[in-house]
Length: 150
Image (cartoon, rainbow, N blue to C red):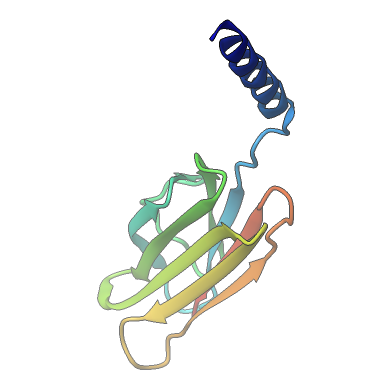
């Protein structure tokens, strides 16, 4: 009994040392830019949502309008090493029927990070929404996404 207990404690100590020696888990950071590609209208921030363990911090005032042909920037930091996702909604200032929903998802599966983006318009007409992504970094998962409304 005493020998088994001592052996179990030794194995536990070895496991603790091995776990403690592993590198720290990656905490991905995303840089999201919402670009107003139009020369004729301003964008108004409508809403945002963040899921899968991340939170959004706007580098600019999130409720401010985005003037013509400029950008608003958001930094998203993950509290999870494995996933980060969310969406931002912008609309043409003064025209709630012209709205874009921009989505991003970073996931860790099969030993690597994958990034997907989506940009959808809630109306038909001349205004378009698009998404362009860079990254993610293979080890840490950092990425960038530019969403454009024009």
